[in-house]
Length: 310
Image 1 (cartoon, one colour):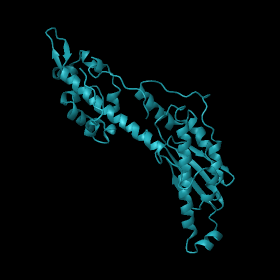
Image 2 (cartoon, helix red, strand yellow; image 1 turned 135 degrees about the vertical axis):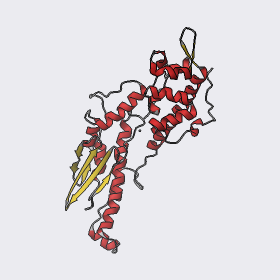
Image 3 (cartoon, one colour; image 1 turned 135 degrees about the horizontal axis):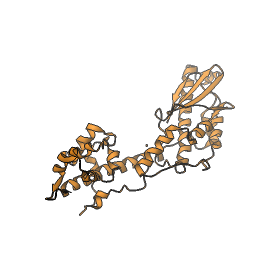
Image 4 (cartoon, helix red, strand yellow; image 1 turned 45 degrees about the horizontal axis):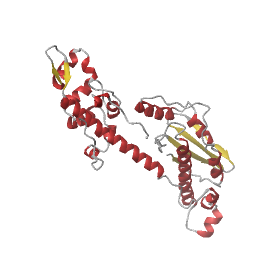
């Protein structure tokens, strides 16, 4: 008999908040605490070293059907041995593994919900209502305007203020585009993380401004200069291409977890990037100082385990 989890009881609160990242000894300690030492040894013998490795294993007891000296001690711990030298898993051991699975899977579900809510909470920079008023915010910090309005403020301070807003706008636009294209890219629930998935470099050399994005897949993408701003379309094209190993890695994590293959055909259509270029052209000037800026899985299918039905 399988007892359903109560909607009013959040049992995953019993586990460490960062348990999904546990592996090796830390992971086995959690297994020993919530399932038992014999169950921990069973997982360790199979090389199940982490939470997601455990969640993706169809039946952790299936290996016990193999005649192997390494498993003899574990069989004596988790099984009954019949007179004909066949083994039957103890109901208590199977129940402990099922309970551990429920705890960890619930933790995974909560993690997905947090990331989904976080992506929905991404908002445009303060005071930006639409693309038509961007020029009002990112206005020209000219030396004349500064001296007349705030004589004490240095050009460096003004540039810093501008770069701060510029940073927020680029991160917002990049996430806005990525959010619109998650579904067609089979990346629902994912997000681009600043200084982890990419880094943006804006370099000033006198009147010349250059911008590039360094992707975490070790590919550097030069942004096209558009009037006095920059277009992000080159980086969008890189993300959509098969050569972006960062996106490939994200898709592989989701595919491995779902137990299915997820690919994107080259003929699939993603949102046009030209609308993103418009807002960038509204930026009149970039500060002489350099800045570095930058901005995890949705699973709609329930994992199935044969152990639950046995």
